[in-house]
Image (tube, rainbow, N blue to C red; front, side, top):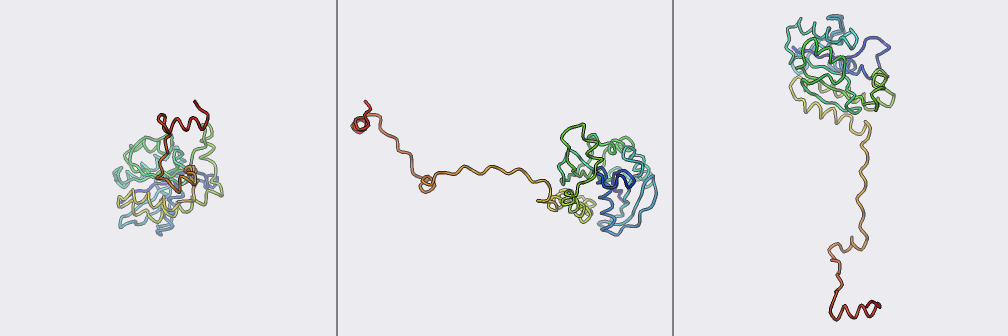
Amino acid sequence: MLLFAGLGNPGAKYANNRHNVGFMAADAIARRHSFSPWSKKFQGLISEGTLGGEKIVLIKPQTFMNLSGQSVGEALRFYKLELSALTVFYDEIDLAEGKLRIKTGGGAGGHNGIRSIDGHVGNAYRRVRIGVGHPGVKEMVQHHVLGDFAKADREWLEPLLDAIADNAAMIVKGDESGFMNKASLAVQGKAAPEPEKPAPKQQSHVRQARPQQPVVKLPESGPMAAMLKKLFGKE
């Protein structure tokens, strides 16, 4: 058995926030794989199903983000699971919009939900970090993550959530690089474009036609040099 936790804040007010993309990922997996209806347990909502032949319990803590560890810790203890059985899906401002990375362990990176889980159970669990971009200045971070996704964001967000749901069994099987590749392909060309590289400098048509032609060096002394100096008036 494995525990998949999607992080967010409960209530309609927060439903479309960037901070709730973990909830969105959990919902997408539950829908795609016909998991059980959501029910209240462990201070959260849980849904059960199967991925890659393994039983999965999805959990969405309803404690608000800053206390996520209370809910996740309770579930881990109830099922007597090791930390290696836990995968957490959450928003990451240090990744560009539409980017996705997986890692095991590490710090909280300023994310209060991850800090809470680390404090309750430790940090040796798998994290699926879903990029929501950075507002550019530290003072705007809270407003950014607690703000709703824009309509234009749906162009990359929906394909990314679909890819997470479609390929969640790859996480179960330990194919993390394959999972990240599928996610990357899903949003290719739909997230913010990379800046264009300047075109290479064009050669003159003469050099293009005769690239092998060496530059002729004029003689500095001898009869030919004397004749050229006389011709051009240079003594």
